Image 1 (cartoon, rainbow, N blue to C red):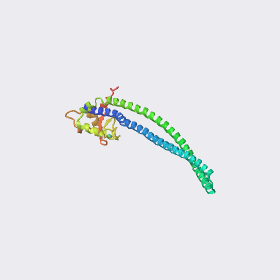
Image 2 (image 1 turned 60 degrees about the horizontal axis):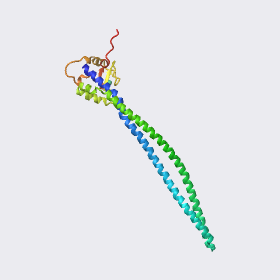
Image 3 (image 1 turned 180 degrees about the vertical axis):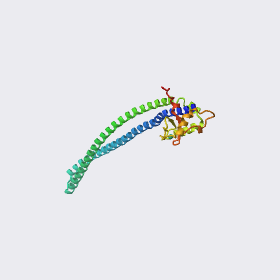
Image 4 (image 1 turned 90 degrees about the vertical axis):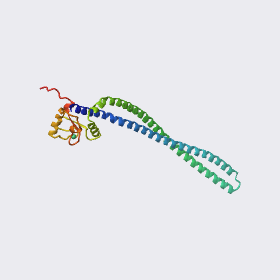
Length: 254
Ligand SMILES: [Zn+2]
């Protein structure tokens, strides 16, 4: 029984040590992915703003072209006015000149508004580009650090789990099955290393008789071991293993 309980305690120590690594192996790729998504989001914001600027530029170009045409029309209207022979012709020509002048003034205002908008948008665009550049290099730095850590963790985990298969092989199949099931719990441990009379998994004070049995269980011998031969906490069902099996007692100083 002693060897088997020691194997169970060792298995738990290995899995407990690997737990942190497993967590990192699980969360690091998600972290890298999140950073990539942030950069992509900034890029799409920037693309939308570039489109807005391009649209405003196109509109301004169209208005400028129209302004040229209106100025030419004004020239024609003016010459028509100078050539008018009757009062009626002269009035009509004057009205055309005035109307064209108003349109020209409108266009000029529109163009100047568009110019102001463009100046503001270009400044935003510059700022966004600067932010994107920073975010990109930061994300690249962090992603490569995370990837390096990922590789490190993979190697460290390999080291930690050396010998695990042998321990599993040394344990009754049903015990391993139960252990794996207990291991998926969040609140409790699968194995409780009992030091005094408390279950370290759930903090329950174990019954005195059970404590004595836990301490004695190492010396139990004979027959093939079954799941029923293992002592468990009445409250959290963790396997109970006495600490002496994990950390042999220090020689009595006397
Ligand atoms: Zn317990």
